[in-house]
Image (cartoon, rainbow over all chains, first blue to last red; front, side, top):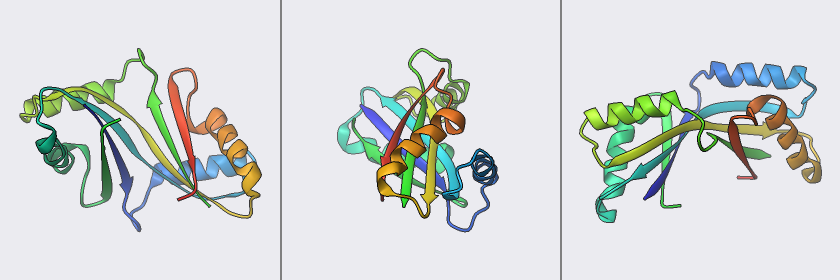
Amino acid sequence: MKVSIYVSPKKGVLDPAGQAALGALKSLGFGEVADVRIGKYIILRLEDIDAGKAEDRVQEMCERLLANPIIEDYRIEMGD
Amino acid sequence: MKVSIYVSPKKGVLDPAGQAALGALKSLGFGEVADVRIGKYIILRLEDIDAGKAEDRVQEMCERLLANPIIEDYRIEMGD
């Protein structure tokens, strides 16, 4: 089973990588870019797991390791 | 206009961050995880741009700065 997880900096949290990308895009001539936020796109492959339990398990993985819930939001998408 | 970009390591390209996360998940007891790949989730906000041109411009941003097309795939999603 494939699982996609989208982790992004919470609103109001500084995002230095996003700010650096914004500056670089502007200096390359992409003046239309008003804001850039950079998070993580995580793709898991799970094996031998009950589909009913999988989402709870993935949420636990996010809370414990994959995201930092204090400064990051995350969204889980089960399946392909 | 909001744009989401999903950047992921190409198949076959080493992903040390993903491997480290895989090892950490296993040692935390998440034995059902068979593979982890970690890419970037980039959120852009564009202003004052013709919607018809926006996707081409974003593709150019990806090719020139936001992704490395040699080792990464990317997918662009226009709008919210």
